[in-house]
Amino acid sequence: MLRFFGALLALGSTAVLAGCAGAPTAPAAIPNGGADTTPLAKCRVAADHDEPLVTEWPSSYKARLEALLHRGGVAVSYSGCELHIVEACALPGSYEWRRTTLSRDSTDIGDEDELYAKLPLGAAGLSGTLRTSGSLHVLTTVSGQMQLTGAGAIDAKNIPACAKATHVVTALSVGAFKLVAGGEAGAKVEVGSVAGASGHESASILREAGDPARCAEANATEPSADCRSPIQVFLEPLAHPSDRVASIPPEVFQPVPPPAAPEQPASKVPRWIMAGAGVLAAAVGGGLLVDAGSEKSTIQKGGLASGSDIASAASRAATDTNVAITCFGGGALLVALALPYLLAKP
Image 1 (cartoon, rainbow, N blue to C red):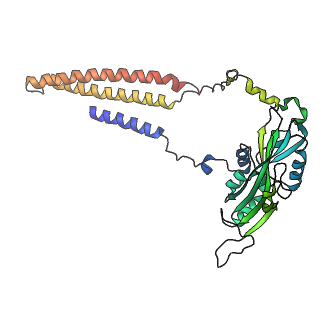
Image 2 (cartoon, rainbow, N blue to C red):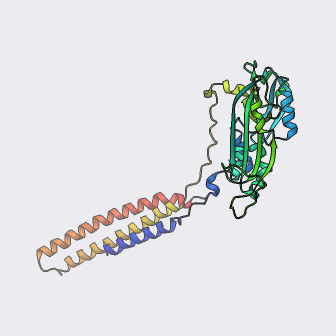
Image 3 (cartoon, helix red, strand yellow):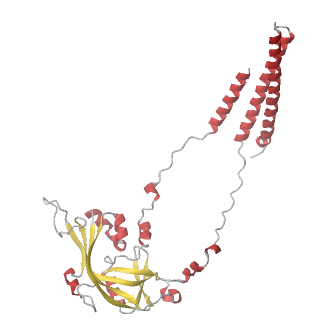
C-alpha cells in the first residue's frame, strides 16, 4: 500500500509539472545579424568621417566653393551623404596654397557598402551604375591643398547666420580626377575597351575634371589652371549653443528610473500544485493507517505463531502510524496554505 501511494504521489507531481512546462521555442532569426543596412544608416556611418571626397559634387557646387575660398573660412552643413555650403556663415581666416608632392591614387568600389563608405556624397546617384557595371574606380591626382589659416578657435555659437552650419572646411585638396565604371580594381583602366577574346572587362569614364599631365606644373604660389578641381575636403566640427551641454558634469545627468511595473497577481498554478500535494500526502497517510490497522488486527487474532513475528508486526504498525500522522499533518498544512489563494477572486 505504501509503495502504491508513493508511486501515485510521484506520478501526480510529474504530470502537473510536465503540464506546466512550456514547449521550447527556437530563437528568432535576426535579419542581417541585427545591423541596419538602409541607406540612411549607411549615411550616419559616413558622417563619422570628416574627410569626404567631393569628386561627385555638382560642378556648380565646386565652382562656388572655389570662389568662396577667397572670402574667408567656408562653413558647410554635413550629414554623411549630403554636403551643402552655408554661404551666410562668414567665418574668419583665409586659405593659402600649399604645394605637395604629386600623388596619384585609385579608390576602388566593388559593392554598395564600399560605395557609401568611400564615396558617400555620390552614393545615391551611383548605386544603379555600380550594380550595372560591377565596379567603380575614382582615379585622382593631387598636387596640393588650400589650407585655412588665421582662423584661431572658431566658435559659431554667437553667429546666428551659422545656425545651420555643422563644420568648417579646414583644407581642400585639389587636382584632377576620373570616375570610371567597370574594369579591374587596382589595374590601369583601358577606357572604352570591350570584353572579348582578351578577357578584360569594359570600362567607361563617367566624369572627369582637370588634366593629370598638367598637375606637375603647380608652383609655390598657385596650382596649375588645369589641375585645381576640388578632390577632397577636410572638415572640423563647429561649436554651437547646444554643445554647451558637454560642459555640464556627467553626474548632473542622472538616469530617470523607469516606472515600477504593476504588481502581477500570484499565479494559482503553484497553489494548485500545493493543494494537490497535500491531498496526495493525506491519501498516503490513509494508506499507512490501513496498513497499521491490518498489522494490529493480525496480532490481536493470534495469527502469528512466534514472538519475533509479533514484535516485528507491532513495530511496523507503530512506524506506519507515526508516518501516517506526519503525512496527514503535512497534507493539511499544504491545503491550508493554498486554499485562501484558490478561493480568492482574480
